Image 1 (cartoon, rainbow, N blue to C red):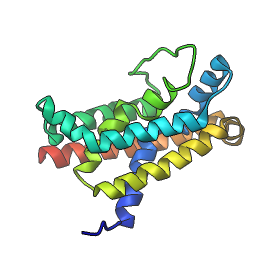
Image 2 (spheres, rainbow, N blue to C red; image 1 turned 180 degrees about the vertical axis):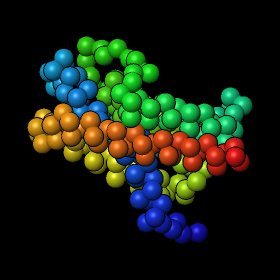
Image 3 (tube, helix red, strand yellow; image 1 turned 90 degrees about the vertical axis):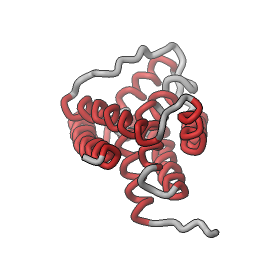
Length: 190
């Protein structure tokens, strides 16, 4: 059986992951982490985040079965997490608080900033809607973009400015709100 790639699904998953990873909105955080640690290993952070996301995409459902959960329940829970993240983005709230450690090699950049709970939840939620191969392509597209952003955070900060980054963050927050509501409705039957 040949895997068929669907451009519409690839674009949809890419946009969803782009919004949830929110690497543009994370530029100020990345810059602050770089200031504290002195250097960010962009290649290492991108590779680790990619591997984590792909492993969770394929093994996440099995892990859920082991602990007695179904994908639909996880998708509903994920829609609530995505909703909270979107509210943070749109309203400028801080719901999820994490301390920044002294170093930024893998933690907190690759996990949980890039491949965090919201991203993992989103991957399983996407799996209920889209073909796995299209999600993998969406992950790869996003991780290429993440790598480019990590390599060029200072240039992007100057290009967009503080207000431009805020506008992007709020726009993707609204998109995430719509995605959260769609996931909730599709998995609850409401």
